[in-house]
Image (cartoon, rainbow, N blue to C red; front, top):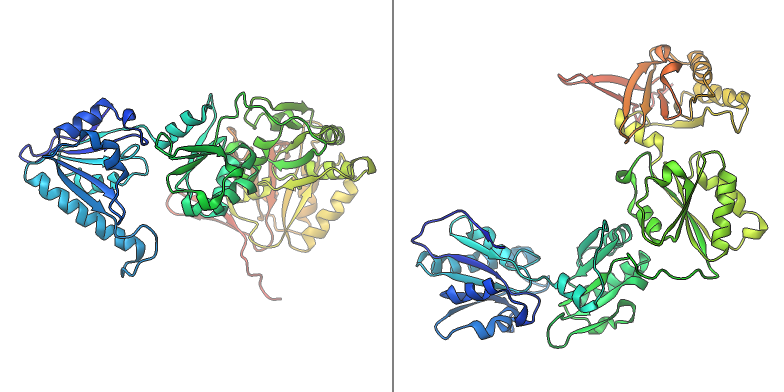
Length: 507
């Protein structure tokens, strides 16, 4: 398949962006060979040493009557005395190179710009394309990328089924690489060379180093493959990639004597609320344990056991997870929202504090809690001091809840009220409203946020005096404003916004 631009002035020449594949001349496409044969001018990029990999791939198809245009980069690292810096030097180079090619095209000559791999995939050709394709008839001829070549040379599937492939430049900051490697299924990191130490650090920090493979000069002379962890950083050239291949059917490590437990929060709803750190922990686990509703938010992965249970067996669930870890498994306990806010982290740590589990490592990873999600939808009602209270009296008596409500209300704190009601608890919201009205104005804004992030999301604001318990269920979170909380309507649409000023008035 080729990509052709709209027809341009037929009196000018045609521009070809020719993908040559990863290095082996035998992997050039027939269309690429024909385009070179049709060209009057063959252009290729190189560093200042003058050697062009692209030219070497296509060498057997070049003719003595071809006009050759060597586009020599002025810099290949960010060390330059150009007044515009590295980017400025490159922009100037691209403009001059495009002008050289334009002169041939204006003269009616056909120009083929050679590109290793695919012209539109991290290639130098694209800089010529952006400057010339709107003026001249253009055809882009795709080529086999280094990503495909690396996977073929490793002899292992790169991505399968519903796995997600992430392609990353090694020039990204190490922390960014770490986050993205942790959150994806499979990955290819390109542009190694001097970036290799940071790339290797990112693989190690993300827990993916043991899976990672290395491919150097795929399909070229001097090709090398191996385990990424075994590669000497001083030996790594630019033309190399790091690969995390498919996990489907890949052997998972056998249970060891050193299992662990990580407690993760999935946020208030689906995948959009997962952090990269949480995604990585979920992918690395060989067993998931959690309330079935929350487990359903986590993608199914081959070879990963899933142990779902009812919502009211937190201690039993924690003990089960720790027993799995004691048998050598890497266990992720899945919680909704943030695991440390009325959720599974406390249950796991309580059981883990028993002597029999004292040696099992337990980590807690944060998630977006319901109060923060609801506040963001409403505006910024938690912009100043606030208190978080659960209205559920299943684990503590109502008298304690009422005392805390009074204390927080008298201190003029904004309140985030979790677990306000359920089918078996129908009176707590009314009691809380009446108690708060003893300390707050009837006009105090109350945000009712239900199923934030879910299909049935509903976020609206009412006066405290108008709060109807019948409209509140277990999937609802309430945010009750302080005396300073503002409820305004903005713009012609009448958008409702609730916010609490950061500055509190002096007495």
